[in-house]
Image: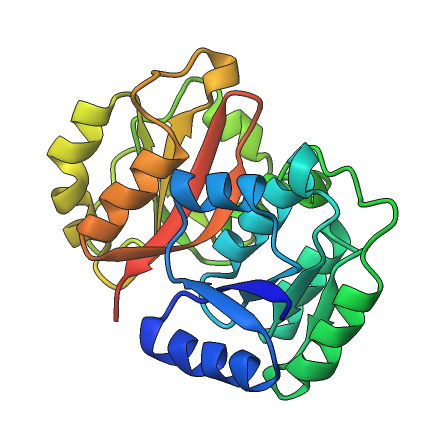
Amino acid sequence: MPRVRLIHWKREEGERRAETLRAAGYEVCFDDAVGPGLLRGLREEPPAALVIDLTRLPSQGREVGVAMRQTKSARHVPLVFAGGAPEKVARIRELLPDAVYTEWTGIRGALKRAISHPPAQPVATRSVFEAYRSRPLVEKLGIKAHTLIGVALAPQGFRELLGALPEGARLLAKPREGCDLLIWFVRTENELRRDLSRMAALADERPIWIAWRKKSAGGNAGLNQQIVRSSGLAAGLVDYKICAIDATWAGLQFRKRK
C-alpha cells in the first residue's frame, strides 16, 4: 500500500481529506503543522507522494514544497498541491512547475498520476522568494492606491527602497490606529515578544508585516522565520504571505485570526 503524507492546516477538514485518500487505497500520514520534525521525517522516510492543501495558508504550503526540492534525499518525491485560490496557485506553479495541481474533487486521479510519473529532473529551486524577485516591492508588500502605511523602526533607506508609491498612498514614520497596513521591523526576539501584543492590537483586523534580519545578512541568531511565525500564532494572528524585502530583511504578513 503506497504511503502518502498529507499536509492540511485545519485538522478537522484534514482528517476528512485523509479518509478520502485512505479509501482510495493509500496509507496516509496527516500533519496540520510545519516544524523541524515534519521536514526531518520527510527527509528520513520520503513518502510515495506529498499532498499539500492550498485552501489555507498557501505560503506555508509553498515553503514545504520548496524545502522538499532543496532536500537531496526527498527531491524526487512527487508533489501534489490541492485546492487554493487560482492566483495563489499560479504563483506557486511558477516556482514549482514539476508538481501536480488539482482540485480536491480530482485528487484520486492526480495522486495516481503523480506517483506513476515522479519528476525525473526535479526543479532546482534555490529560494522560496525566487519567483517573486521581479515584482516591485510595493506590490509584494500589498501597498495600493490611497493606502495609509504605518512603519515601525524602519531601517535606513527603506523609503528609497520602496520607490514611487501608488497614487494617494502615504507612509507614516510611526504606526497609529486607522492605518491600512503596518510594517514592523524587529531586531531581537525579546523585542518581538515584548511588543507583539501591542502591535497586533494596533493592526486590529488589518494586515501587519513583521520583518526580521536574515541570518545571511548578520541577523540575530535567536530571531528567524519560525520564531516570528510561532510568536504571531500565539498572539492570535495567522500568517499568509512571505516577502524578501531586500538582501537584508524578510517578512511575514499576518492578520488577526478569525
